[in-house]
Image (cartoon, rainbow, N blue to C red; front, side):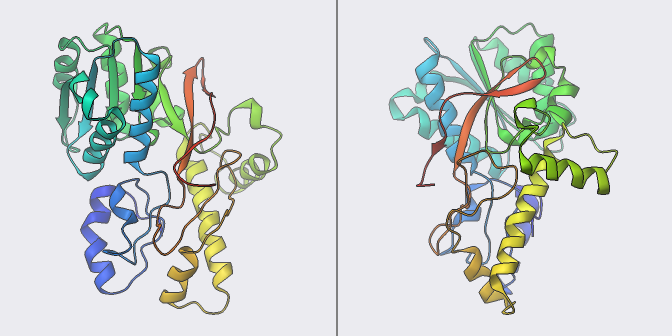
Length: 299
């Protein structure tokens, strides 16, 4: 349950499936976790990267006049999903609007040279398809370079206030756009929500020194409740087969801290539990939601 990262999960996926070991709700949004015909024992959880970045492309086309895109991406399956989804969202006729891309390896200590290359292209929209560490570096370096842009989109996995934006500098993060599916628990608009109160009580008891602005805590808490749902629904039939059967038959299943209107839905042919997001813009010290819930399936 919840093994972390695209590369580590890729390394064990074939083995787990060959041994018929459930690989449930993996902690990565790569599209490869939703292919039940090929890997019937592997299921994702969060919105897949291709859908997320397609949404960014469509939003930019609607809101930025004469966009010229620069794309930073990690050279692995996740990064390739970022780029592929973004191109899909642009459509064939608009792919030429991507005037510069730059990749990096996950082991690279920094992405300074890539950011210099992207700025030099003359692009006015930056797409950050990275993990948390390099996402923070990209935001900070763009500011150091004095890069003036019309818009910057950053993947949800690198949008934590505590672990990404604070290290990058909150001043440098103003105006960033991302897509969210979880509540920002430090946001006052949710302070009276029952699920947020329960989460804060849980954290006060078990992790009293944790930084609640780090979205990873809320993420783990929320996905754990979908695992609890599966185990309870399986009842006393706790076989591998029944666990997967239950996981692949969720209909409108809620979990604490998901944004209102976002629920988990799966089927034997749909291994993407969450496929809805809401756009959000960083302002001040927090993300501010805007627009409607965007879904690629009926919620």
